[in-house]
Image (cartoon, rainbow, N blue to C red; front, side, top):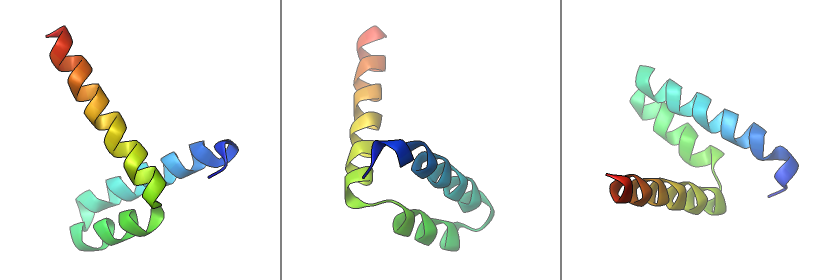
Length: 58
């Protein structure tokens, strides 16, 4: 993945996530197809890291 397109990927993923609220079946399918394996791992690592930092501060 090129870093100059990272913002576009993130915005697209957020838009697909917002669409999931309206139509969960279609939204989840689009979210899976929009994110590559590397992006999914990065997203999961970011969520885990954020959780651990918040837990440490608490």
